Picture 1 (tube, rainbow, N blue to C red):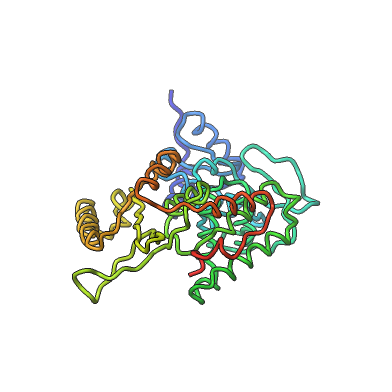
Picture 2: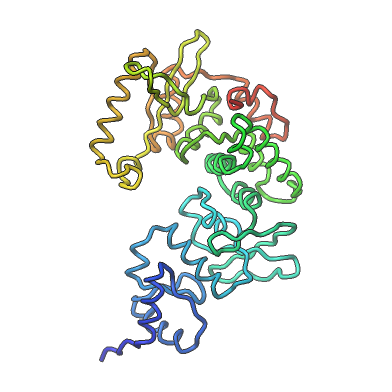
Length: 357
C-alpha cells in the first residue's frame, strides 16, 4: 500500500517552488518525510538540507539548478561565503556546465576542515566578501582569479573579458582597458601567484583580455587565434551602411592585412536563432533573413567574410585552416609573445597594440 503524502511536506515544497526557490530545512520531521520521497525518486537532494521536486529540477538548466542550490544553502547557512564556481554562478561569470556539480565555500585558515560530499571548502584569506541578490560571495576580483586559474585558456579568456566589461574603469573611460587589466594583474600578483596552482594561467589570460568581446563564443574564438599565432583582430568594428549613410554595421572581428585590405570575421552563435529571448520576439526565420541581407550588403565592400561557429572553433585544426584559407594574417611575434608569457616573461606593448582601442 502506497504511503500517503504528508500535507506539511507538500506545502513546504510547493511554497518554495512558488517563490522560485529550492526548499531548505534541517527540521527532523520534514527531513524524515523527504527521505521517503527521495527513495521513490520524487524529490532531488542536491546538497545537504536542500530539496526540490524532480519535476521542478528537470525543468531548470544546470546553471539555474546551481543558483537555486546555493541560494537555499545561504538561507540555512547565513554565515557561509561562496567562492570559485559557486560565486561565479551568483556573479554571472561564464563557466562551463561541467564545473557546477559541487558547491564551493570559502573558509579561513582556522576553519580549514574536511570537505563533505557535494560541498568543497577552500581557504581564502584577505578578501572582502560581497552580497549579490542575497548571496554572500568572494569579491569579483577574487572570484575571477579563482575561476580563471582552474579553467582552460579559452574559458579563462572568456572570464577575463567579462571581468573587464564589468570594470568601472572600462565602462567610464572608453579605450582604457589597459588600466583595468593592470589593476587585475596587480591584484593577482598580490595574492602570491607562486603559491596557487593555475595562477600563471590566470595572468596569461588577463594579459589578452578585451572588454569588447560580447559573447563566450567570441572569446573562445579569439583564444584559439592567440594560441595559434594569428594576428589579434579589431573587435566590434563599425562600418558605414553602403545604402544608408545614416546607419552603420558592426562586425565581430576585423583584420587589417599588410596590403591595406581588410577581412571580416563573424561568429555564428546558435543562441540567436534558438533562444526566443535573444531574438526579442522576432522569429528565427526573420533573424536568418536579416543576417543574409546584412552579409549581402557587407559584400559591397569587397572584403572576405569568414564565418565560424562554436563547433568550428573547438576543432582547432579546422579553424586554423579556415582562417588561413581566408587570408587572416599570422604573426610570429604573437606566437613568440604567447610562449614568452607562458614561460614567465613580460609581454611587450606591441602585444596589445590592436587591443588598446
